[in-house]
Length: 383
Image (cartoon, rainbow, N blue to C red; front, side, top):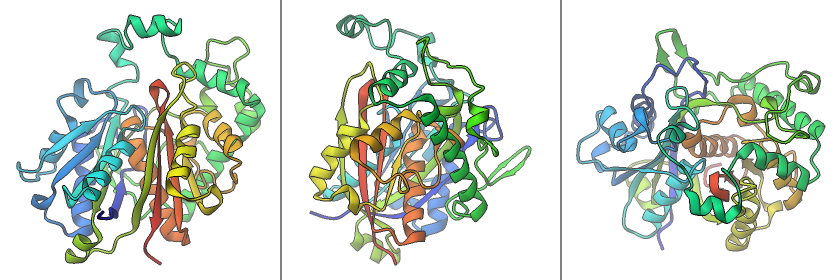
């Protein structure tokens, strides 16, 4: 079976809600990272077999196969196809899976995987204004009026013994680690500067420096549970962003003069309770480790998406994970979670972190609406 390798990975800064990136159409934001791959690798876009593009809320500005129109916005040849993938928050991580699987199956040799979400322009929950998500039969099956992630986060906190102070301590640490990563230049090489009417954006916008447990303690819970522990400060931020990765075979990379960064080692998907919503990363990771033949202690860094602080904390407790390796650069609580782009953004961060620190194995996992989750391991190939 052919191997799949990632030869380049780039992302935009993550823009805060109604921030600097909000004025850019998602196809144009996507085009920036697509063309950055060309710039970094020197590939001819005409040789790209397919573009797998994640996007969650495919309405309005993000409708009509946003991946295809991103390709056209980038000025790539009309012959380059694209498909838009939706596995909720894991959409662009699933896009990477699709790209790797196509390469490993020997059906394609040069595939771009990535995603976009401009939540400022297409708000979270916009689908509710145009129809009835989930459908009556599913709601009746679970005895609920909807599937609410805030409720799920509170349920999860109670189930795993996570107090509000534990969530807030974790959230303050996310800001601290993100600030340290930004200040050290850890993100500089991976970020594509974005030119806007207000200037050039080169850094993630959402970071709130000086966030403390004390300042977070002043925020009111936002869930429907009276004794809830989830609030805006220990949940991910609404954001805008895009990211892209170039997936190929080692042989094709060599022919193109490219040095692969990581090998796609293994991937898994799983599903859990859709009412709790957020627990999928735990069974997905257990499944992935069984499949990969690796143990968690073999993994040097874990990117567990910070949809809510409950997710990485419960995951670490369940897996017995080393919290020093968990989200070492901070995460979505500090800098944002642009849904359909987040999987590719996290993978881009993870790959560059592995390259910068000589980490052999990295693991990424995402919770997703409906209780599903993706989990992926990549292996470092460069010294």
